[in-house]
Length: 104
Image (cartoon, rainbow, N blue to C red; front, top):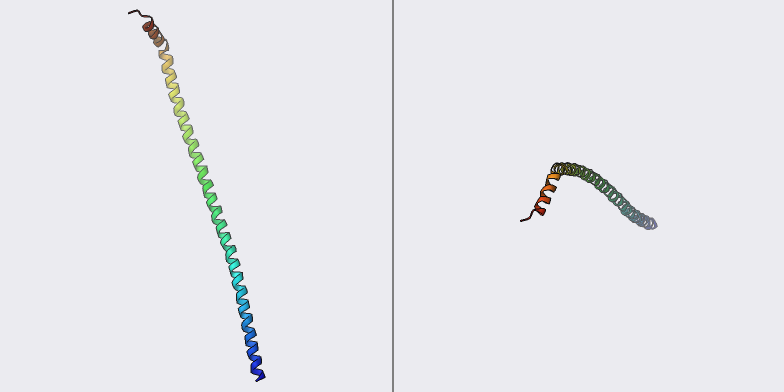
């Protein structure tokens, strides 16, 4: 009889150890999952930041390209207007003075 009680006590002790080990393993798994989740979140955030930086650089390059194109167009128009002004300036001034000084 003592032998059976000893075996039952041993089984009970063994079962308690298994439950305790399972509990520790569960806690360890939960902690590990939290660390893995944090690492995945960090990786995703770094990838998103890298993409955003890439888009920002591309947008800046596109903006610079447009700015240069607009500056060239502006300079072309300015030169054309200046040429037109220089070509007709004296005749326009003479016509304006004549119209203003003409007596009706």
